[in-house]
Image (cartoon, rainbow, N blue to C red; front, side, top):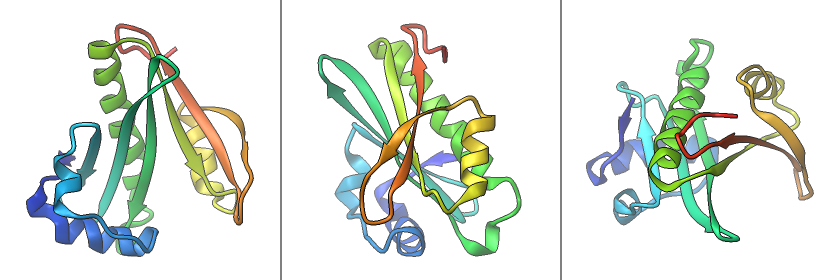
Length: 145
């Protein structure tokens, strides 16, 4: 895994079109509060957005996308692990925080992955498609609790 730079904008947008039908701009990849990462082969991406939330930091795993050609090879597990690593480093530097993740109720594999990785199901979001809300809490040392 590597952090995406503005030079990676084409790969990022190719993957965002696959997963979300939205695009990023090069400036997005330079925002310090947004950490976008890619697999070395540019077949998958993850994104974590850090923000202050009621006086403490929170992180939101906003995107996990695996290109269809790369599915079934454990890439999603790598994305989730990188998300957790990035959040832990941020918590060690900035203090205790909560990492939020979202999964579509129709995607059983993603639900199983988050549950088996120690994420806690904390609720369901209401919306057109709905989603499950997951969380991992980090202490001031960057350790998941």
